[in-house]
Image 1 (cartoon, rainbow, N blue to C red):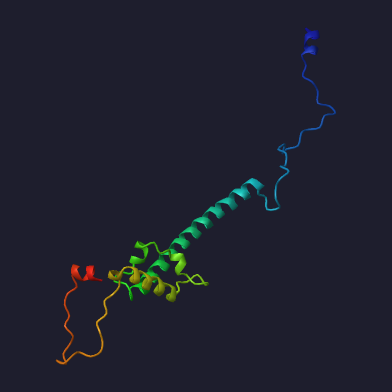
Image 2: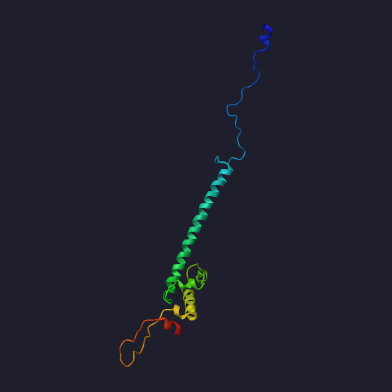
Length: 150
């Protein structure tokens, strides 16, 4: 039995040093802030998406404001200022060099529509001589017949 006991004895650890406590290797791609490049890139992509969404929202808001400003100016010439868009006037053609709505360009576009389609323009009350009676000029409601006559 003594022979078997010597054969099954556990191996000795003489001359072998113990492994270090932290055996996980340090990654090679760690920045000075302790973040990995993948995480930093992911965070930057998230910020980029947020910035793009914000930019799209602001661009839509500015476009809506430009449309409303152009309609407000066109209302002085047209019965309905939004008739500009019904006849394919592009809002970008009404902007000045600074990106704001140019009043002269809107007025030119509205006057061009009135020349092509007189029924789009506002009717002006004639100013001047009121005739022999000295009263107000006779006004009558505008009807379909007036539209066909011009």
